[in-house]
Length: 197
Image (cartoon, rainbow, N blue to C red; front, side, top):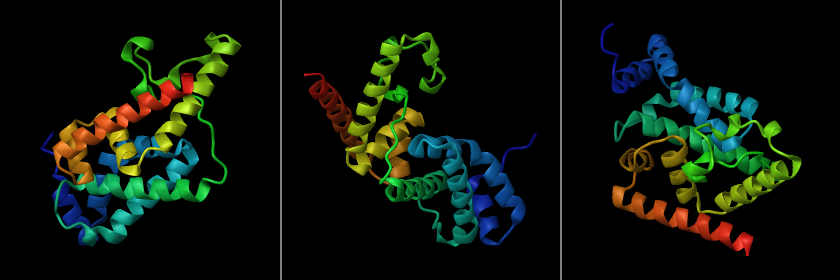
């Protein structure tokens, strides 16, 4: 097995309309981008459409990538922007997600199971209602965060990027990312505490 071609080589080949390079790049990032989109829009068919749209943009706009910062950051920004645009057009019918994002739950509170795999059938009806309501409140608090803080929370906790990687993705200094993350967590914590008072 030889070393995989670096992203930069692939994107340069895509700029020359080389289909093989596009297919390799799609294979490399399809899973991560699909998870990223599903997290933002919480709607699998929509995420699948947005996944196709993201890679269509890569194919048609490859020349817009200027080589500044990692290609992965550019790709995630395209996906994020498409997902946020999708949500803006759909905001007239907000959906209430059934699960709490696992990245804001203390690790001790839940078994090592992603939130979407927790079987609500094992909970009593009141516990399910409480979980749904708490998840909906939490989503609302996160939605009310400024976009840059919301995106940072997602990259660090859901996509499991390091703070430095998240800062690179967003094109900001690591120190800025650190303070944004701190304030985002504080806002969420205060929001939840205010709900309980």
